[in-house]
Image (cartoon, rainbow, N blue to C red; front, side, top):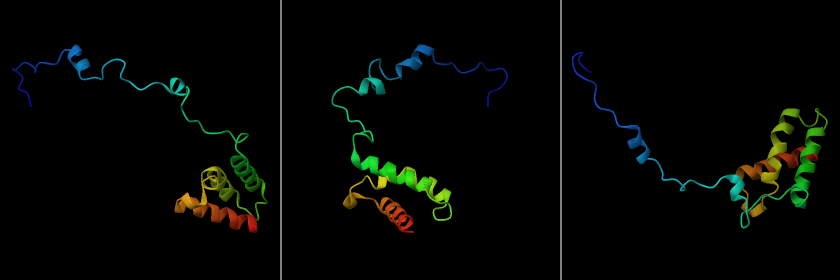
Length: 109
């Protein structure tokens, strides 16, 4: 609380604030520059047969009879297929395994 007769406290000069910032040139490269040689990229479905099969199963779920596969379930599960069916069975997280089981149950009906 400042009294009316006292001057305000001194403020830092704007150039002093820049000294606390990261030096120029130390920022990360943009994603366009990072996509050069030696960087990994996700394969397209055309390049990976497993991803193409995951996409086909997702399309089948979305096109299934609504009486058999509820549209809300199909919309929820279809985007998860690449991340669950595309993962190696031994390396799947329990959530990925549950997605695989749910899709399997739906496809058997």
